[in-house]
Image (cartoon, rainbow, N blue to C red):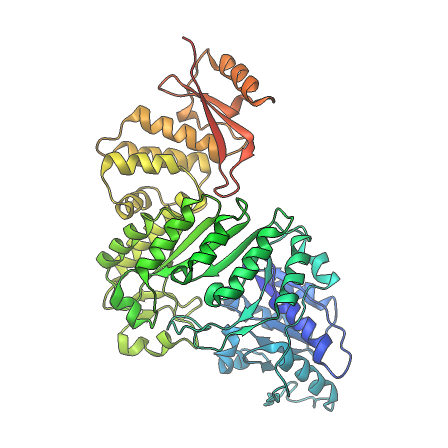
Length: 537
């Protein structure tokens, strides 16, 4: 069983485990896969499992579902008193004593393709358990396979039946050569799966109806030749899928950049984790990045306008103050990436940074996701400011919303990017706010800033609304009732060659007509193309 963070996500881990049982188990086992989400009621999830009356329930455990598992384990015990519950995944592997005390019968550590089927065989060979205690905790230490585990093909007919257009995931390598102290993947030997196998799997996924295919490799381009071959293969596929890669931007060489420049628009997304521009923080986190080269490569990739670029920063790294972080944020924003994720340090079980927390005097939440709460360099108030800033960033820029509005306000107010998002986050926190209401709050916030002209601000917001929202009427405060609206619609239909709805056109305060072509969406930004049409008085 997997409990995903969102419905649109799918789980790769549970299907790999199912494939591992088929490949490595000595005895036949009837395997069923259940995928739920954290938004479902626990009783419903338990019911999804109980309908199969399983002997063993294996649950993939992560920070996003750990809190939910506490109640769920009890419900599963009630519904399935004879079932054996096995946990795996990083959240259980590095905190096994806790989960055994919470009701799990077994916790498997590390890679499970071989150990999980071996456990099933062992349980199948075991004698019936005594009535008391019902499930005594036993130490099962699986032997290592006699030869390296071959990659499992998780893409069975059952997998594709269950996928249903959700985001698909694929693993082409395992491990990461770097040793970042906040990550669990670092310092391991990287295992690269056979290229022929990977290509076959990529092709199958590209034909499966998923719009996005994410490669879970921790640093996809750590092997330049391999990255080039797979980039070439994906670019050559006849598909409309978008492939998402996690990369180290400073590792791109001229050959990789040249190949990526030829990618069809929207075919590839790159997520480049910069994490920080502050050298003492990078050094303390054992993160080795050529920041200047990373910046140069990101700008080169953006120049071609064919690849969606996502960059990450982590707030809360050792020695980085709020002032230091602001400098790095502004530097990252200046790159012009399509997404700038502001994340917060999480002190995960098993990570080096968690073992250093006491020494560094870093305080963090005891519940998942173990986020930093204060440190010698960031106070609780600093983190509140950062959280508000992240809220505004996430609900505007990172969703390609109100981009020209942000650019206009930033240019005339002379606020830095961080100061702009901080001001918006404080004035208009968004916690599920309706988009039209949020637009009004954004307008109210920005209209008060120095040098911001009301007519220019409204025109920017009208253009942004049309380009980012399909089929929704403009908010009332942006409406400009003008008798020339019918003239504008007629001109737009002549230009586009198709019918234009009334809410796809507007007349700006400047007197110029603006129309959105709802059939022409940029595959990289996701925004609809606008056309500006002069009108007769």
